[in-house]
Amino acid sequence: MEYRHEWKHEINVSDLITLRQRLRAVASADAHTVNGSYTIRSLYFDDPADTALRDKLNGVSRREKFRIRYYNDDPSLIHLEKKTKLGGLGSKQTAVLTAAQAQAIVDGDIGWMIGSGDALLQELYAKMRGGGLKPKTIVDYTREPFIYTPGNVRVTLDHDIRTGLGCTDFLNPRCVMIPAGDAPIILEVKWDGFLPDIIRDAVRLTGRRTGSFSKYAQCRIYG
Image 1 (tube, helix red, strand yellow):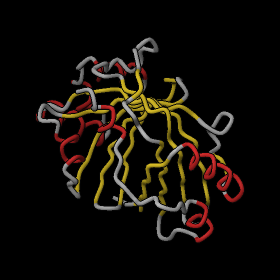
Image 2: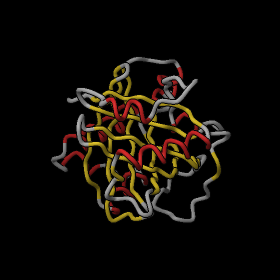
Image 3: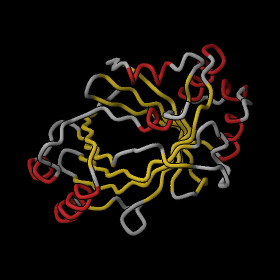
Image 4: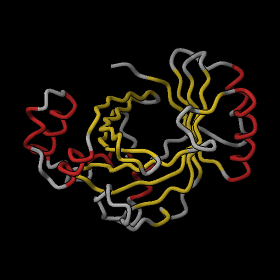
């Protein structure tokens, strides 16, 4: 499993405008954006004890979470993802799902996963069947992503974070989404072996410290 360095900062609208201008000057927009951004819809999983939520809130160094996501309201490409955190490092494993497969998981029809031949699907099956893992809530937001090839750097500006409360039917475009409390704008910086000075300088903001903000935890604010 390969880990990448990760920074997160909570920022405001003024910071967003400043960073957007700086990054446009030194980095490239992600090729999948539409007018510089795209929307993300994720469905997060947790167990009856809310282990993923509690591990995050308690600052557990090594933790994991499962989610299913798609982009720009287009369910033709859906990913199952397992995020693993180890201190300030992060790793992600992925598998591709069809819309029918994603809906089956939401509906609790998971027997087919064990024979799928995909290790990540089989792991999710085991944790749903044996550990009570199940879909918990939908998280929506808008992302402005930037790429800088040296160091394999990815910088993202995430805003308009919204929660589906207890709704888990994430393929339903009519699922009611509401603002996730007073959610901040999030700057994320991810890189491999080194972070080039040009990017380090571009994302530097006075008075901002690295944090550990979780969109999933924020979207559980109401329960």
